[in-house]
Image (cartoon, rainbow, N blue to C red):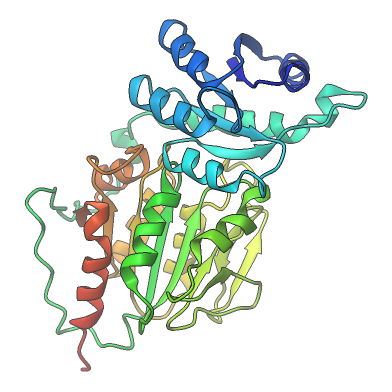
Length: 356
């Protein structure tokens, strides 16, 4: 790939350059601050930008916002400390950065010392390869269930035939732009809920713990990283860890798996939702938020065909419409919602359930 490097420290730029060259990539250009990167991205757009966060003149979060608006170039944030730069990292991801990784420390072998970064670049290449429009050969044999575009706001379906104890699980997956979308949902849900929630966000392992601390707000639903053996609990949000795939076991407990290894994003929304379709007794509500690629479309379809209520974020409020569009194109998402109306949708669905 042609990769641009944005960093105000020469030593960091040279470290990244050595890793890119060792991995067979080409350095398109370098920039010393965010403003310079915005200008260069317009005149010579690379295939990917490695973006620092703390820089003079314009920080990496604002540069990410401007570049994503103008050119939609994939951006990977590279920082020396996720914890120290957490707020800027979250802003950059909310503006469309794909992920956050640590700046590699080069000792002897750039390919070895920078293996984590090179693996992330390979994953991004794989995601880009798989973002093409879904072909007719991949479409399900069953007729599509209709989905309702926004506007107008889709009506809520009758819920009288579904018992309250069946609607107890809400599962939502997201990727690029997901942090801001999940934040809106957490704040909109308030401090109490009868439902159990599971969130899956494509995110680097270095960022997951900090993301969980940021997303779990005092006075709102408690949020923690899902642990092996844990079961969904009403009134609590579980966030999937990011170094393996989250799965649902037959006994209703959660676990993690390194398989399938060929999937370039972790945790895979498809893997988890398909395990739900196989092992979860009952139905629930599932949705796909903003994100690059099409992860989650097949899994959402499997749940939809099991009787789950399904939705996807609309294009107007998505930072990247790849994942929700794939779900809609596949007939997996019955309802297309702007992010500001997702929590209202969830609460109405849950409140309209009645006992048989």
